[in-house]
Image (cartoon, rainbow, N blue to C red):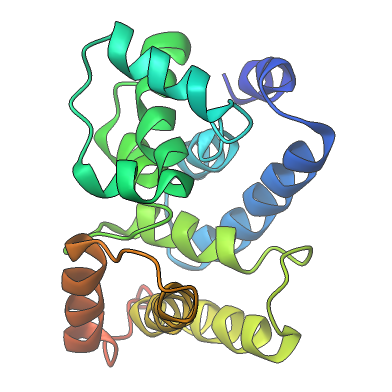
Amino acid sequence: MVKEIRKKIENYLSTKRLLHTFNVEKIATEIARKYEVDETKIAVASLLHDIAKDIRLDESLRIIKDNKLEIPDIYIKNPDLIHSFLGAFIASSEFGIDDTEILDSIRYHTLGKENMGIIPLIVYIADFIDPNKEVEKSIKNLILKEALSGYIYRAALLVCVEKIKYVVSEMKYMDTDTVFFYNFLCENEKKCLLPSS
């Protein structure tokens, strides 16, 4: 299944986006091993997280309209977010994915969501710390260190803070999902989730 998806996504993504996707898969798999998480699910979620990223905005809106999808208002106000919403639909309709954890990983990898499970959390983090992303290396290293040390919520909180700072600096709309996610991470950041050996 993973090999098939790896091949199929070449028809959807640019070379640059493919490189990012494979980087995310590699990082997410490394983190997942620490938490004894299903590596197939992690691979599928990582490979499909940006499946709609290279679709033009007008085409994205046409797909949404043609399929009568109810899109939250925040996605219209901030079109950069549409790919995550549409990506979950494409993963389901064109790749046959019906696993909630995988679909949540795709849909919430940009905004986050309160009570997000371990697989979506790992994809959220891995997406942000791709070596090719324009984020300070020391911040990426700290995030990865926290994630690999069992503090997955703290790692996600560091990502969330960086994303919030960016949204504020750009004076863009902020979704309430992100605010609730931030509060959820603050509540849980001291928990260590490494399995007992």
